[in-house]
Length: 386
Image 1 (cartoon, rainbow, N blue to C red):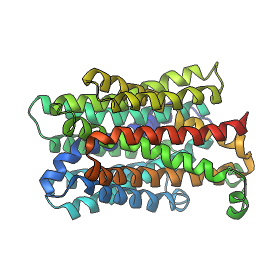
Image 2 (tube, one colour):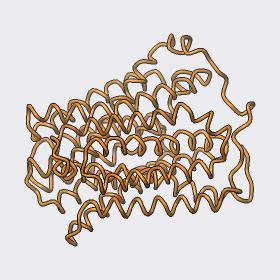
Image 3 (tube, helix red, strand yellow):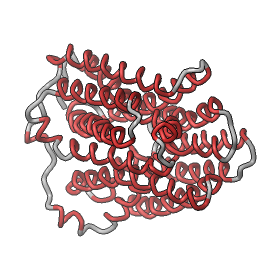
């Protein structure tokens, strides 16, 4: 791993980069019902936006190696933030749904460039501990979005104002990244890159598909909680906008706090032990929400689900080399990341369509079944790691 006197500065900027990555994600779940009314489309049209985000994310993810070979990380981060900023401005001001879908593609492209390329960069520049904190700072950004909108609602401001504020923050971050261009090192040398293994050989490894499915269902669950909790509280629990916004924000807030606390716990407890607690905890949280027993129970369930979601993604990544071997780890993590993006796009949209038939009250029960199923899949993998 390369180190330099600029490392603390780069780490600080890295945290800001992941905050910027989370900010737009925390906005959509709360603002979507208002965007739906503004553009005159049904609530289940969220799937179109999520697919556009996915397409944009993949378009830059698959080109990350090509991009990093030609541009410094500073320029890559700056251009990504500018792209995201422009997309947010379009969403705030455009009354046309097709235009908003097109803008969502560029929002996804900006996020994909930051997420994929920066993870490659961080894997050879930063310690595993720092990489873990990066995911926590993503949660800071995702939490800040709902907090901002809640504050705006209580002060009689519109959701569009929140998008304008976040778009402005993105542009300011772009200026910061441009001003630190010289601090960023060149991409990793070839000898630092993992061995290339043919994909057919990797896919022939036992249980690979289970590992892929865990990521597909987990990120689909996490995205569904983030996108639909506000709508469930607003439509089926009849909470005021400000209260529903605050409660839905607890999911991201507890996820962020959980990543910080579990990072400390992991110095004394094995990864598999934490995951064995996490999946039942997620199921218990969603079960509380599905009981529809009142605002306090709903809030407790949202907080539990968010807290126990915290360690799942980074720890399942950590277990991948243990389960499948380091030779295949790079390939499999790539497949898992792709499955995660697909799950985050397809499952929330599918649940939105399902809610048209069952009603929003039934959605937490569906999420409970999903949580139990992905827990069983993960338990099957963890048995192989023991």
